Length: 78
Image: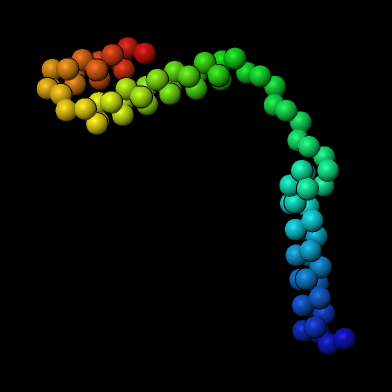
């Protein structure tokens, strides 16, 4: 075996090992464990979604500047 062919063989083996180790667990038959519930994180996600809805409404609705300022202030209070 020549030196360049040995390098190619080593790289091929390392690539195969890498692909085997990074394969998703579902394909190996071991389903991932469910994540524990985090109520604080879930509340934060709900609050962020509400804020995004308000921001989308502000951007898409045509309003006068006074109402826009009120909506921005309401976001700052949260």
